[in-house]
Image (tube, one colour):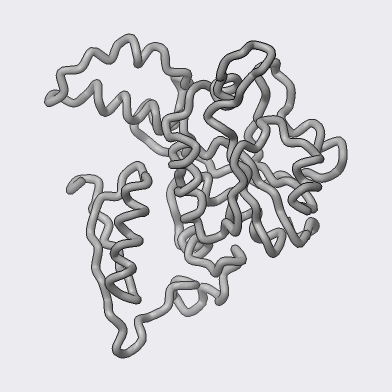
Length: 261
């Protein structure tokens, strides 16, 4: 990754149901520059030739769960994001990179294609303005949808007819969550990376056994403890945490276990 460095970096995507995989690609992108711009694909664009509204994401991937405004709020909450640009084209254009003075575009190692099967990053790749970073294994928006449907089907307390919806969801039968076993296990290094400073880099070494980037409360600070499940992070969580921040200067989030949640 260090072979490519720039000042302003562009990373785009649907960022639907924002999860730690999204945060990780943003973190990796921020490591490559000083200012990170996240391009957000629209919910809908007006197709004048058809005289109708057709979702940009839906054309290529299917309808998003969260609206563009919700996804924008969630993206802005990620500490490595400096700016969010709405209505970014699904196929990344050089004109967009130039307009926002970005040196290159960053994307994960997963394949992204348009409705016609064309590489969504073909143009920037040919121009030498594309950098690929490793995707985070074991997590995707599709997997999250599968888990939601699976949990709903298995819940005896919910009397819902989900068969049609379950069968229509586009997800692989060999998804990492079909057996209930995830392929991804967070380790101390990944936790340290996510606790890093806003430039994406950890600020200390792990030799001391401490987690980088997490400071201790200063004497006299007002400390607020916030417990919760925080499952499927959404705008309500962000708004709630912002309110908590108004009550104090040091926030401790207590995360409920899977069993308790």
